[in-house]
Length: 310
Image (tube, rainbow, N blue to C red; front, side, top):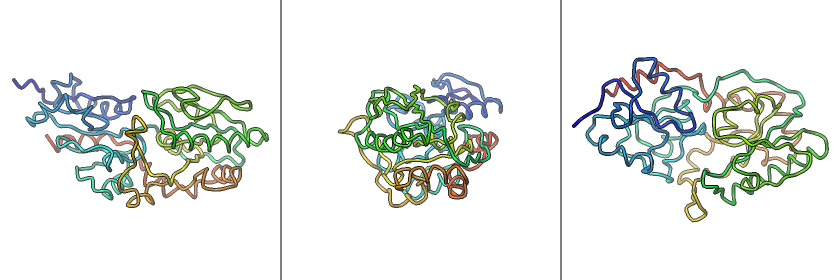
């Protein structure tokens, strides 16, 4: 029996990242129901672990499956890391640069630009000499795995910042998730440590003069107008739950110049000079921010896109 209800929605709300999409549909009259009854299903990634239980009703065409952004970084999961589900209807992305990247490596499902949903978009907040530095290292998975490569990137970045902290050039705070050692770091004098959570709370970033980070935390810092550096941007995106399953994307050369953030703390020798340059002006990142962060989230674009498939 078909128990799908028209005008209904279910969201697998990964770390609260689907909330803006659910609200947009609720405000347009869609009702929240169980997955087994939903006409519209929102999900952060269509890998088998997420989709398998939904396949019976997706096969009938009674439900439509939409992807919202799993992370702030453009979706590279389908570039050799996971297969795209044949039952996915369309994918929402934050900005035009995300479309360019997915199309560059051959992603074929429909794409809809919905705007930046992770935070407000705010003007750049210049700081002549950034002193309060927040470092948000690459964090382990829920199982506690973090590749040696990513631990080494964290450690190399931390080493540069720790040297500046010892010299009195900066005050350093490390916001870590799932254990300091699990991030490839150590407890040191001259450093304040804060345990964070995998949610969309950026209060610690707002207190800093400059953020050093990777992926969602760093991208959102840029959106909030906080001077930001990223790290090892020339290393291809990767994924894995163990060293045995760890792998890189397949088509990095096709979109690396679109994706790479212009200010990389590991790409120059003068770390303090780079910090101060990043604090003074956003000139070097303006084009990247326009393409990758884009504009504010637009609920009506989500609603119109969803309705076009019904």
